[in-house]
Image 1: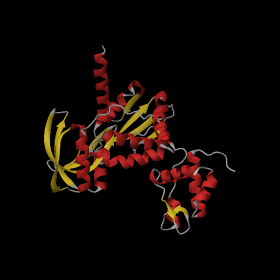
Image 2: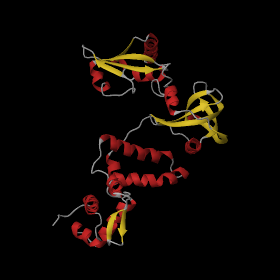
Image 3: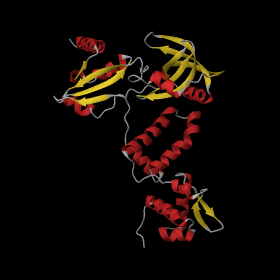
Image 4: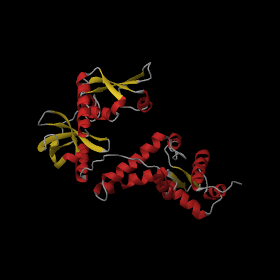
Length: 331
């Protein structure tokens, strides 16, 4: 006789019985789980609807089994683990929060509702367990810029349909708007902000547009120009941060962190192609590629007196000037 099982244990027991025996009668399942007929019916329904388990009733054998063309497909179905790894829980909760933040109650939310339901099912054995997990794990995002939801949906649709888009984009540096015709290539979520990577037909090149700076947009009937993903990555992902630039444009910055700051920086990834080493004096050397110093300088300034720029005189001068300007404000 088995001791009393909680709901999660029953789900795994059902999964094991169906995999090991192929087809199991309702009476056998009830006896093995030691539950009432109503409880077993609810469990089977939950496994089907919330956890996408392909369980069907086989009238010929008078039992339940996995509906799979072959044994390999049945083996591929797995229930979520009792707990998740750090990467898995971060990915699941990030997806849930991203989906929740895209649209509150518009068309997009209705389209994504089945996906959010499935994520909810993966996060816990029941709705209350999923809600409790979401309450107990908090993801903090800073400086989030909210972009108009209607443009996210519009641009996402144009991206999938491979259509050009006319848009009015506000350039913050110039404090003015420009009208452009673009071919969307990719949506990018970076530091809590959405961006559109697109081919700009006015400047005849790839550009990156912040969605919150788009004042107006409409989809055109014209077919979008297609850029190979490899070319897109080479043009926009070569350097540091959102001001990526091309591999050819990138130059390398050498940052040397004091021993105290190094204890944190040594565990951070600033760029996928970064190079790093510990120096004999206990300091930490980090090399990163960059094409535009704007964002890199801001991240260097976060570490104040704990870091120094070596080698690149122009970047060192920019950081020194920013520090002097900041110090002058407190003089």
